[in-house]
Image (cartoon, rainbow, N blue to C red; front, top):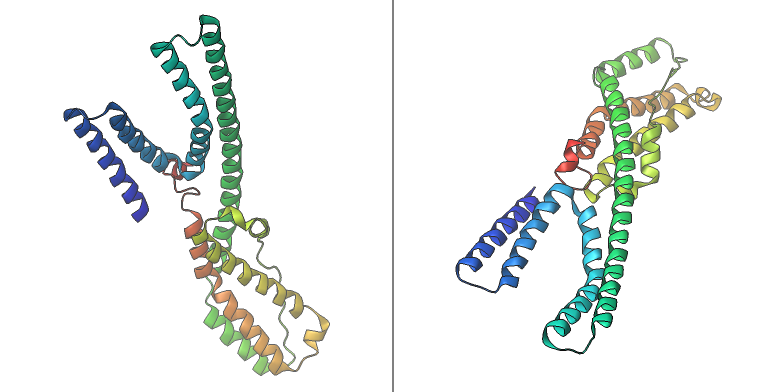
Length: 258
């Protein structure tokens, strides 16, 4: 939010500078530059940097086109170097070049919108999955579960634990397979939650094996205690991951409405 407030301040300063430039009779191009800067800041706040980057590329591509257009205007207004046919040919060339840039911008925007939509769908699926896991884990009193387990081992050293079903986190697995789509501040909480669930899944698999049942009761009890301690972390760790995922994917405020 601090960075966004800085962008807002820059937009306000640019607008005021443009108005001041008009009042003082400053160069017209400088006033236009200030207003374009303010529009760019507003667009960044609404759409995010992903689409702003496209327009920066387009601006770079338009530089030679703009230079050629300026040359044509200068020659038309200040000299008779070109006849009418040559002038029309140059104008047509500029129009074709501008059309290429427009085609590029349109294609890039379409691709970016598709990528953002897939990303939002993936994050929505992961959020739904995390919410279900957290809701299931939160009501359980894990300290009480540990005491019950210790009592069961005290009553019968051959006591064994059977996990009927574990956490289902297929969407989270797919997300961690393409972790690059997340922002830097989202990667650590999401990865932490994934590794926690992965450890629990591995422990559940091993506790169902015959060689685990063959261990002495002290080792089996220690393993199960460790399993319960990890289960206790599921709800807070999952909530932290869900909180960072609910932030706008590209920092643009419009994206928060999706």
